[in-house]
Length: 252
Image (cartoon, rainbow, N blue to C red):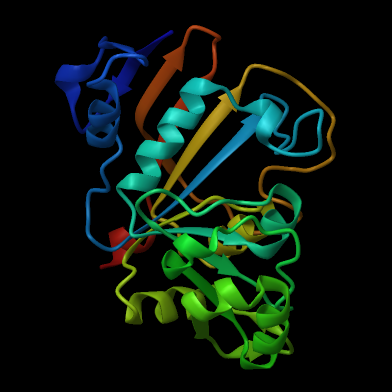
């Protein structure tokens, strides 16, 4: 399967390039195409149907994805310090620890039931929660993972974590370049609070009425976006990088 670079502003010489996803050099080329432009960076990496749904026929994002999307996902994870996900995604989809970056799980309740974290990789797990939720985190992680994982406690507002406090806590621990993979509610909260530098959006060539919007039910003011990169595979799936024009990078 090939992947065509339709547009890129950062590497214009690569426009028109075709990548064979089975070629041994392709992962490195993708890491170059997705390298964050600054050390401190928050990007969202999400997949949606053309209809805007974040879930496919099985109720998860898995049936919207394909091999190319997963290769791009791997590249984006590799160039990040941490992969940020909400506890609801962990409960619904399991989530394994990435091969290189750290897995950061955000939970207000502490309920991480259903996780698939390997105790041997748990030293790369970070859980962000209120102080009051640490007992639930320990119970639902299980002792082998709990003993190896890191727990970052943040102030909460009636049990709800503030997105800015989450980022501050992680960056105090050296996690500067982050990619948030959702779920939709968490992604929408970061957008609502103006904390996102870039949106990486994979568009699966299907329409479906799953009832799960890609940014959840959050309401937020519009932000202007600039297309910095667009790739397309043989199945007509699109892979876009959008710069948030009024994002944090523009205010630094």
